[in-house]
Length: 192
Image (tube, rainbow, N blue to C red; front, side, top):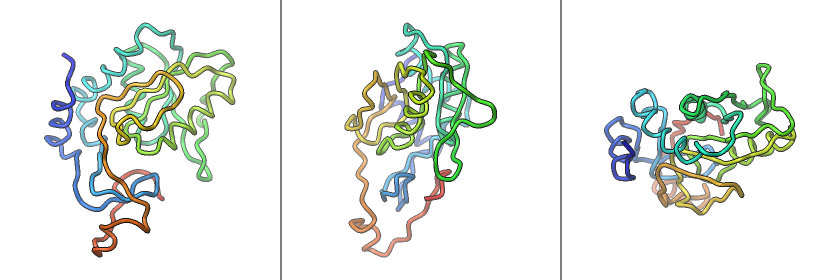
């Protein structure tokens, strides 16, 4: 069963994964809305439903490996890889830069699907794309759960998201929530 965007947003609300407040995003921007994908992905049934939308989009494309940025993208990458029966690896931060560690590697010519949980500016995905290209491997597509840019961010490869929303975010100096004196919280995994 494929979920529509309304049903996906209901899953986020039901699991407490769609938050309202004042948030400091991984990108360094501020927003009044935050998608905590880990809260919805903690349920295997929901992870499978969401990630099957990505897997379905890429099922007819030759893929050797699925790669994701740590931490948020790991569950998405693993589940998409499981659904496609492909290898799953992840890149993690070391000295503020995403790198392959833990013995993970990519071979020249390897066909790679990049997965992520939430895209706002696309910074982590662009970093992973560079890792793939620098290894001589080939990016065949990008899949992610939430597109906060409502399609504005384009990676230059076939891409799919399960839900697109134009969620307003602000530079810290322009943030109206900061001007109101509301403290910003950082619920994500990366220290900004």
